[in-house]
Image (cartoon, rainbow, N blue to C red; front, side, top):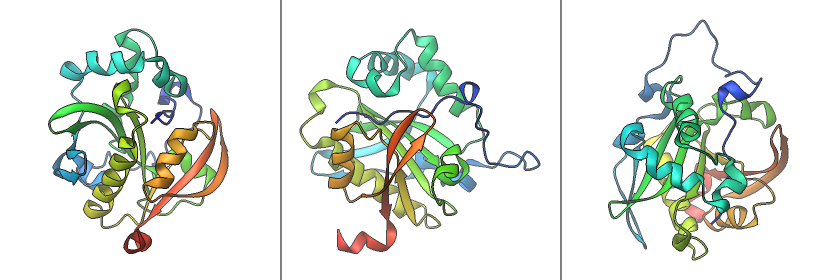
Length: 218
């Protein structure tokens, strides 16, 4: 599965965060209910879990993935480790509303995820956001993992993790590039629906929604 395109780093966009400056930095648990504590999900591919990125130990792997041409086509982070590090630091050193994670399948890192508060993100300017909407970005790091349905399996697992562990969240949001047909298809096959096409500053996106109220129908 092709990855969704990442959001621009805060330093590269004029769109500010939607958290008022008068508010103090919120605890991770107030924003995303601590993905590090969500535990594993059992999938047909194996046991899967999210592990927040550790810049010191994970940067080399993530830089290699970002320099894969298939990944770079939508993430646009090709270059030396400093490029990947700058993208990660925007989140790691940020307000806590976006958490970069490795996806581990049976203990092996094989994907990269960004779990973020879509209602507090500039994305909220482009769709009717609800409180605690939670967004996801994803890429599969290894070519061997793409094109065999694994992305669909993991997207369903991560959406379930969000809904199971974030009781205030009623919807999981994604906004892959509309040209990224494999990614859009994987979201559709994992229980998301195409709500609209929206024009974002960096792309025309497919607004994908996975709604808590419809889980029993999947």
